Image 1 (cartoon, rainbow, N blue to C red):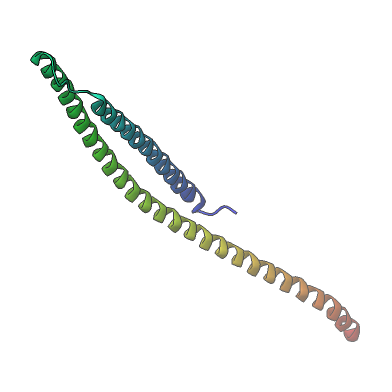
Image 2 (image 1 turned 30 degrees about the horizontal axis):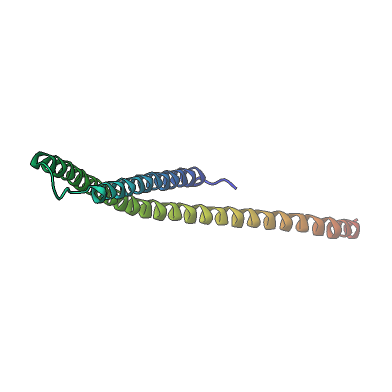
Length: 147
């Protein structure tokens, strides 16, 4: 049964679904970022510092290790931003969910009103039919008595 809130309810549901999809995308980005961080940590752990050799080789390895550490810090910062974004989106999802529930409630109330009105109209029609039948049966006997 369509009400004046049906379209509003559909729009709220679409907004809710879109927010859920956006959170899923951010969750995938967070997972990808965590994998990248784990990969960088594995690379750092696999770097072997030579115990002997040229000082230049030692400096090269230290520079590589520092580059990985800098990249790791950058990725951790990105991960923190993504988590903040997800938190904001989840708060927005809660608000959208609340609005959707309000719209569902208003739609349900409107349907109940429409059904009550329809029931009342049917009752009135049944009363009218009953009255017509009563008058037809009793009215025909009244006309016979008067004649």
